[in-house]
Image 1: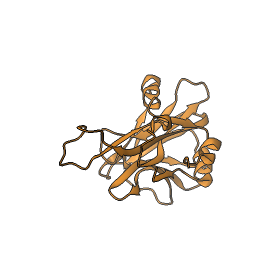
Image 2: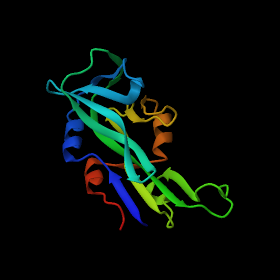
Image 3: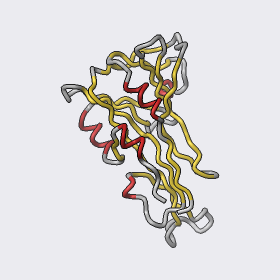
Image 4: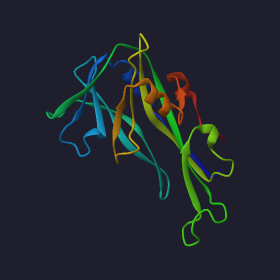
Length: 192
């Protein structure tokens, strides 16, 4: 493989996310798209935002993921969109996107003979040319286990995140991701 990059939050980011208290979360009603960022009140006077982002893997190939931002002054147009109960842990869900050579006849001959795909780490083919692994979702795991909240990339809406609260829908999204604890996320490195 030529290139494999990772785009994960660092230890400071994970610490800040772990300090979020249960309670309301918000989007900016004046944003286009509104769900570009999701805002959480933190224990201090600052706010934390999970933001849709893109990361360059190589020329003309990027991956989409979530990054964390500290917000010192929140927009006045925040809209409450949900509530996170008290949670006991956060699951970090990552997805890998890769390119590989196209098989004969897989794409029209006048196209670049490259296929882009995405999924779990175990699905990356041995003939992959380049890959990028990024944070795709976070799941705030509730103490009683019945009111988890996931914030994830919204594949159906450009440049957007979404909130998922139904356990069946969360499980369906997790099938296309690898799920890490914070320690596993910090320790993971792309294969050599």
